[in-house]
Length: 146
Image (tube, rainbow, N blue to C red):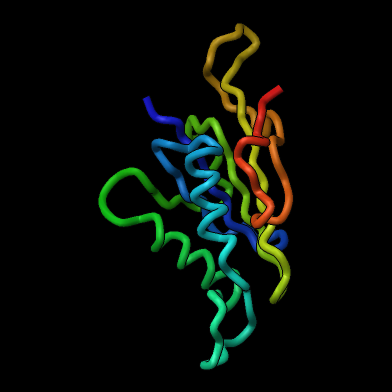
């Protein structure tokens, strides 16, 4: 059985979309994949043709590049509308992009599937924040559940 996760893509308070990953959603898998991909980027406002850094022309450009990076065929990754949270996911990754040249912020949360009867039925978001900060500082081994 796969470890499901959601990746929420935001700029400030505006949520653009949610990417569902069906397997390998744990911090050492999807969390590390996201951090490795995002850590190389600088978000800019306008493209300079002599630019040598790996850039995204705003949050929308970064999110489009992220989806293109992960989605390489049928299955595994699915795009959902803003606000989607009910996908039986064990982890929720939130990417928040600020203004140009600001760090890309990254948050890792868990969710619990429990009811008052103790059965796994309803997801409560978030259950616990495991890590939050600049994506370049992310270390999956620090994501320990209490």
